[in-house]
Length: 150
Image 1 (cartoon, rainbow, N blue to C red):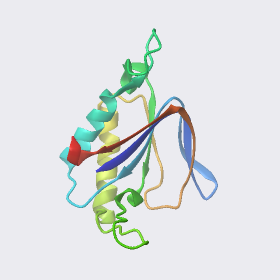
Image 2: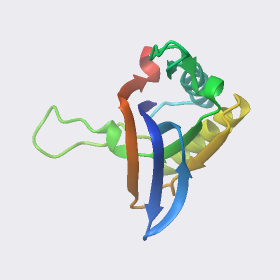
Image 3: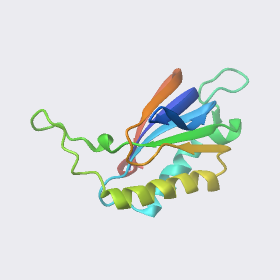
């Protein structure tokens, strides 16, 4: 799985002009399920996300508190384009992305694992839809994660 994490003060995702998911302070997560990914990897990635310390504590240190510590939310948006390979030519190659049926299943598993880990508010986009994402990046803080490196 590949994931882009952005620390936000707020974020929302809309489909056809209608907001389908929104959060206040927390993480906006763009998630790509890759070929060969498993439920175990979804769980491992969710645990990692919940434990990453990217929020300030009383002394203002950026890496003092986790998403769970602050009671923050997670907005998870499926994004198969994170599988893009641009090594050859000018057209992105998305063949490393998982089959949509499996990807949707593991996307759902990831959301469930975040909830089981204690994330206060979880929202999602609409899997496979053309979505518009609005956010206020806090920091800015943006991280790229890949389960192959965990």
